Length: 251
Image (cartoon, rainbow, N blue to C red):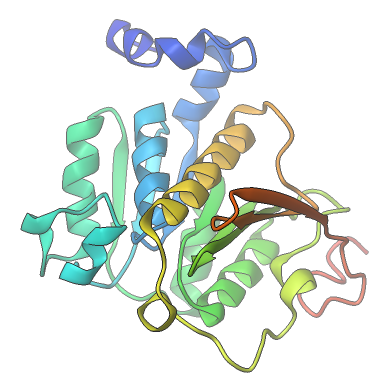
């Protein structure tokens, strides 16, 4: 049940008929794994905590660097040198003491990643490298856990939802396969802060839709963000029946 404090805290979203009390209770019962507490993970964790998600599992093995602060808004100048998980937990606990925070401070290997994914209802991929994204996708397919995937670099962003529970849903590998030969990072190519804030906020929204069961998640659709021209474009993405990761899942 929701306490009087929680009813008041979440009143603005409870007012929405798409959420209401029942939706808020589903959000409260939800468990979400956020992988990466950088530019994307910052708004994801902040908005999910503010919305009242019951458990936030926070995974990051990195420490806060001064160069992070231009875009990783969950951290501040006093956090420099501190582990990102610890910095984020302090901020989130101050924001909403009702949320249970589960720290994952070490790099996740195959076994620990599988266990971390199986322990939650939704995974939000906010990492910054292709190898981690493919590993997270494989773990989500294996456990049947929905994956909210986002990325941003330079002045371009993208977002999609992959839901193994849906027989028609593609997975990350259906879309990207083995990836490209060259992979740039933000430290090499740069990125504008509000862009990762925008993509991360959309990831948080998609996560709440999955937990509370309202709206139409971005399953089978890839949302492309052009920050330079302030344009959004949507592409349809079909499941590959020959996909090496999810191709035999629904047979």
